Image (cartoon, rainbow, N blue to C red; front, side):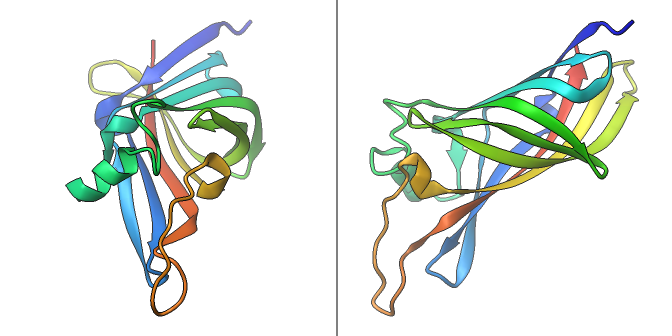
Length: 176
């Protein structure tokens, strides 16, 4: 008989990144340096897991202080009023070597359904005897769907910031 397991984030072996088109010709990357992931499973089976993620908007890092300040402002994330981004899973389906994770992503108090692809790296014990599970996640959202619609037209046509935001993450969970 399976028992319910709780998994918590190993922050030293995890990262959340994003990428968006800049000036229609290149991409700008960024990350959140403060976030948390929790999962509940039946035994070590992630196929019916319940997953919750949150990120601290003030931890956004694009390696440009001016841009980070703008992203935290009311024109984008409005970190003062909406300090967290959250994702709560609603369904998980095994596919290929991983899962499709459906859930509700909430940014600026706007919740929308999102599907992420998760490659399952497996489960193992670290040198200290801790049980770990590893995942590589990927997904795309339209930033305008979440009220992140600031933009500036370019003289050459097009806009400064693309609409599609690519999300990627490498997550290592530790059995609690």
